[in-house]
Image 1 (cartoon, rainbow, N blue to C red):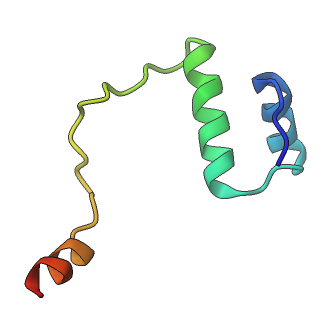
Image 2 (cartoon, helix red, strand yellow):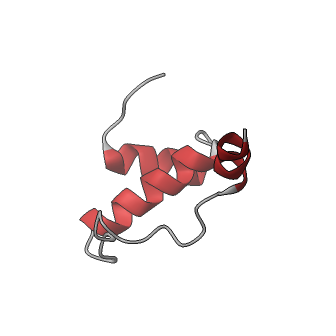
Length: 61
């Protein structure tokens, strides 16, 4: 693992050097927010599609 400045990381996404989907999503989201193109969600926003099957199985035991 290696850390890069955000602008460099975004360039690496578009050049295909960073391909991990979670990393790509995070880098592009961070770039959009810091560039003024998007607003971050409030930290207390509801998690509408939160997975529930695991918790339901765990609780049923």
